Length: 171
Image 1 (cartoon, rainbow, N blue to C red):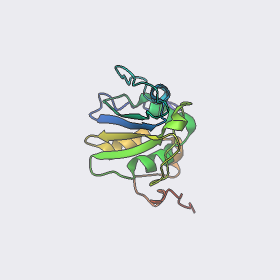
Image 2 (image 1 turned 90 degrees about the vertical axis):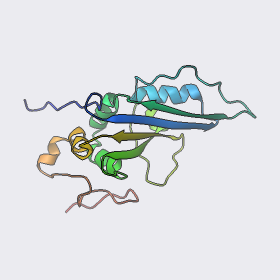
Image 3 (image 1 turned 60 degrees about the vertical axis):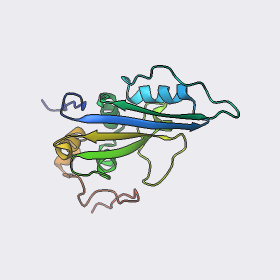
């Protein structure tokens, strides 16, 4: 049926996912958890650390395994940033694994923002690792959109963004 798309989640598809974030300084554990839940609603933290106060900064590393990527992938489609997502998610790809980051500040409002490689965005990041056989095909399928019928895309093709995050010029 035209207009429908395959809905991938990463769960039960042969992939393991890890979402990791570091709280430091004035990071509010509650606000970081709220941002996390906008993108990964199945993330669970037993007891939240206390809010930071003057002289007592946040300091925790949270790691979540095998979270569903359904909300994350849906947001990529809703925001229509699928080609950017394909490039950003595959930039550090090594055989059957990839690691990429999304900004926590954008996640506060349920949006996805991929930081420029090497930048440290205000508000911190969620680092996402996906591992599994056939990851290249899965990433291309998860970020597919009808425009690729006219302009086919693949990981690391001539239309990929540069290592510094600059876009390629299409002819």
